[in-house]
Image 1: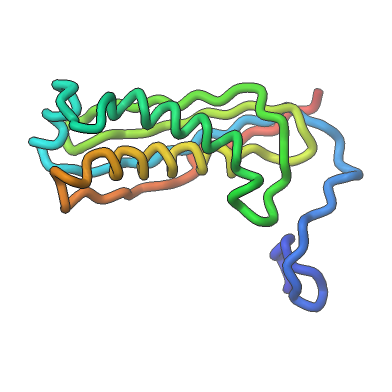
Image 2: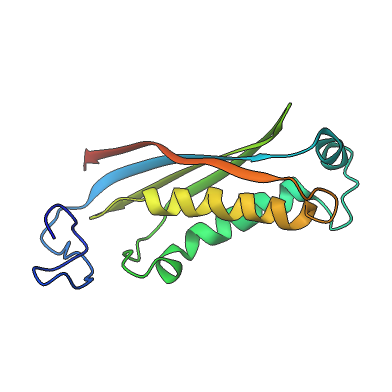
Length: 150
């Protein structure tokens, strides 16, 4: 399967061999958005969600998820995360989530950043679903990734 690094010549899924690659400093930034009703947003702002601190729990869930990425994504390498931040901003239409991750390794850290924003968004959804059946998770994407020789 030409161009897809996670398949061998017979089309079987394989983990990419990174053993010959040098360690480099790598960063990745991802984002997602949870769109919700204004009343749901007010509930979060007021700290009145029945399940507790929505923003604090979502931030922690995102960080924890980034650390478990290799367990969740079958062919993802287990890398040492040196730093992960998950920032949540309440906007007019919902919550913007941004994760930034850093490592020094042979392969990138974009999957960890994407996993962090995904699970943070799912956590918000879970904590608010009882009051808002119209919430949507959208705009999940990688914003940037960098690689620099050490």
